[in-house]
Length: 308
Ligand code: CAA
Ligand code: NAD
Image (tube, rainbow, N blue to C red; front, side, top):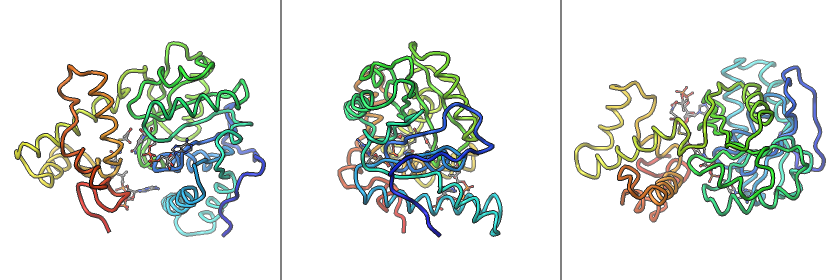
């Protein structure tokens, strides 16, 4: 099956599912989140360009999308012709690029899902602001950074917001749509409509630390690490307790390996710098050690647990 093409020109195939004004979507960053966002946007009929910094990273993302979309198709249609049609139609909406600046030339929406670092995100948006058409809406998928601070790098704060997806994007139903004071009603409404077209359930958020979900998840995960650091329980027992006692689908250490230990360390570092009085946000030494050892979670084969 012919899967992906490299970007030459963006084509748009009209789909019955398209009911909002966002048709052309550029996703910058093709890691855990960017690949998932690009996949679901393509599945729902948007014309998508997925961007990363080199061909090897783009190829890795294409492989992840192929595996994921097959799972989605199997769940939706079983193993029949409809499943193959769904896969090939979805992927026909998806092209790739290694040039962020040229990839935004006809974008209605840019979703940024690059490394969780304020300066790097600002540098990217500053470049994109010059290259994108004036109507293009910019959104960050940041887990923990201030959307307003990222938007400061641009002259389009009225067309800037947050689209915070959850991992794995093809499976998780929630989308947090985040506004800053300058976000216009039209922008907020288009972002919300885009999320609904993606099949997500929307919650509206202000630009507060961690928005809604991560504001609660981050201290919980940090508390789980500290509990084990104190020797009050093993990580296996903590995971079991939260799955069987609280009904969570994954225990906190499984979640940490799932989202990336390095990402979580960045979140904790940023919040402990921004809120030095808040003891709950301090960076646990276990996180520092894991990252130094390259044990970043499932993506490196080992984090808190080992994976095949
Ligand atoms: N695409 C990609 N991955 C998929 C997938 C798809 N279409 N379908 C399933 N998965 C993944 C799962 O992660 C898991 O991986 P492995 O097979 O490699 O072990 C596996 O596929 C499980 O498959 P199942 O079909 O058995 O999945 P399930 O229906 O039992 O549910 C799950 C899997 C939805 C991930 C569930 O375990 C869950 O809800 N876990 C909690 C996830 C969570 O907490 N996410 C939020 C993290 S916080 C966040 O995202 C915000 C942030 O800013 C950090
Ligand atoms: P990741 O490390 O898996 O992927 C980031 C990708 O961005 C990498 O492939 C990297 O090469 C690429 N990249 C970096 N700079 C770039 C640039 N200038 N241009 C193009 N590509 C560039 O990271 P991730 O886990 O997917 O996280 C991405 C963003 O999504 C972060 O802001 C994170 O906070 C957020 N987020 C992550 C999760 C999660 O569970 N991992 C959940 C929700 C939100």
